[in-house]
Image 1 (tube, rainbow, N blue to C red):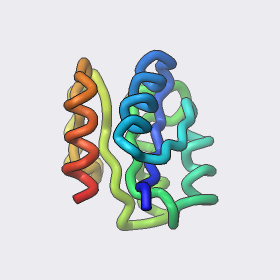
Image 2: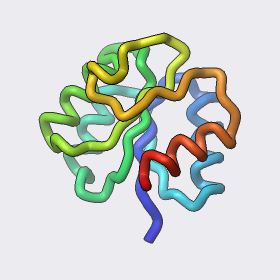
Image 3: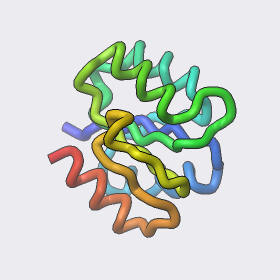
Image 4: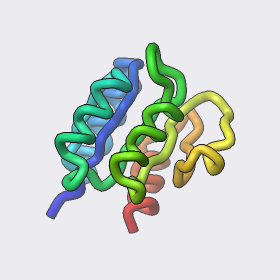
Length: 116
């Protein structure tokens, strides 16, 4: 059964790139560009979502704020940041950070490694 990944990214080109890579890898992808919508999607589908990929800087809620809310819903949520900003991702509860810019193979490997 294919894994479900929620992408939370406000930059359209980056989000479309990530969606294409992950679909090519056989994952089911949910996506949004908004932190509030990400939380609502997670509330509705958290039992189906295997991994959340979060941009750190977005309008409204940033990635850390979204992750905090997701962890309140499911303390075992698997999530990592995809960002060009250097952050102390471990203290924020993320599994890892994938620094931008990155290549398709980097994204595929980071997701695969996180889900295994």
